Length: 82
Image (tube, rainbow, N blue to C red; front, side, top):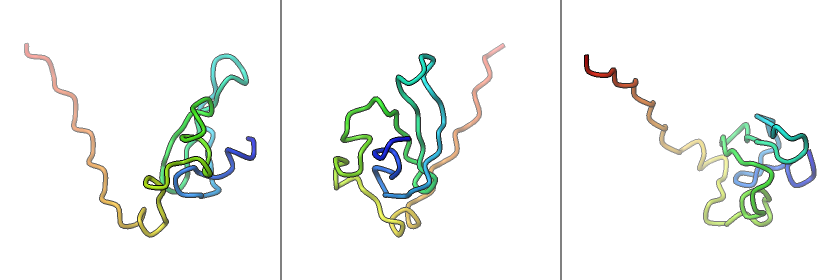
């Protein structure tokens, strides 16, 4: 990973997980933060991929992450009518 992918753009955490790579090697990668779970593709614009360009109003601190409400579970799929 390059220097621009060693920090989470949203929370500045250093644990970044490589999730997926493009079918064409070296074109893009999908990365995910280990703390806030923010996920991004390396081919997106700097405002989505770089901490220094990420919008300040969307940045999060560890305290904000800890106090965030839980995301509801996805309900089970409906079964088709018989």
